[in-house]
Amino acid sequence: MSRSSLWDQILNNNYMPALKANVDVVSDNKKYTITLEAAGREQKDSSIKLKDQILTINGNKQQEQEERDKPYYRIERCYDTSERNLAVPNDVDII
Image 1 (cartoon, helix red, strand yellow):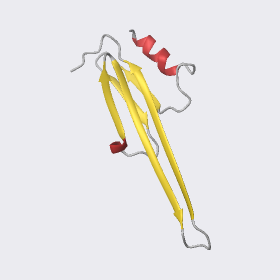
Image 2 (spheres, helix red, strand yellow):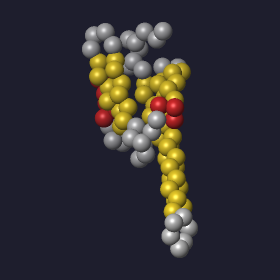
Image 3 (cartoon, one colour):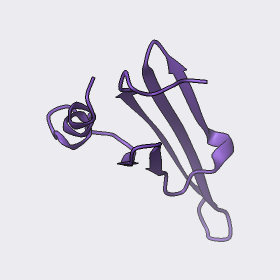
């Protein structure tokens, strides 16, 4: 896969799922740098795996808000999971 093909995958809105983590990929002649926007998530809530030239980035977010001081009891829970799969170009040396 060429560098331009990798960029096409990342930038093509038809390729990206509706729930996605925003990813920036920058490359030069020596390396690729991938930056993931994971608002509200901690590093421990994310995983990165590489298998068969596919880089998979997963993230989970769990939030809970509770109110007990009022004449009522309210609790809200929010769960969010996102995943990005990026094809790693053939010119990348995987160590």
